[in-house]
Image (tube, rainbow, N blue to C red; front, side, top):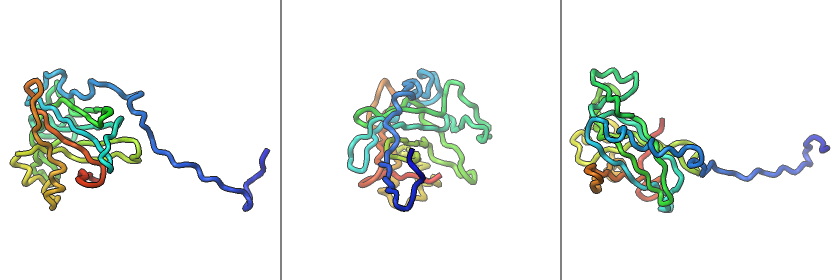
Length: 201
């Protein structure tokens, strides 16, 4: 049996480790990536997809991307949203998807309506996004806005970013059509050139 540590004892540092990648083992539920109840939700069905890359531009496989948003009328399914607007029983305002080996994620959802934010200022339609991945000790949080929206110019969050190049990292662009739905491209760059703007919460 070894005795207590003394000043002469040698301390050996433990090697650092990061969590994962392990998400796919217990959390794979493909249906979580469809917020529309198989197309029954009201509003314009859209696809939000993109690629998650690291600071070297390499794809990040096995990352979790989560989204939450208002429905097509601009109403959140949350008790703090007291707007006199109807909830859609076929719309689930939260979704989860996983990146594949190429770092690509994909959601089927509806284009959200405009909803009030702090101070009742009207926000542009947007989707809140969080990312968890190997090497990240904390989730990252950002937003996906939609190119061409008039309210983008006055959105209290988007307009608080002075640099147009940084603003652009938060704006999804229409890319193509899939089964009649517009595909909006929203790539997420974790660091380095073109890094997506992330927010502290």
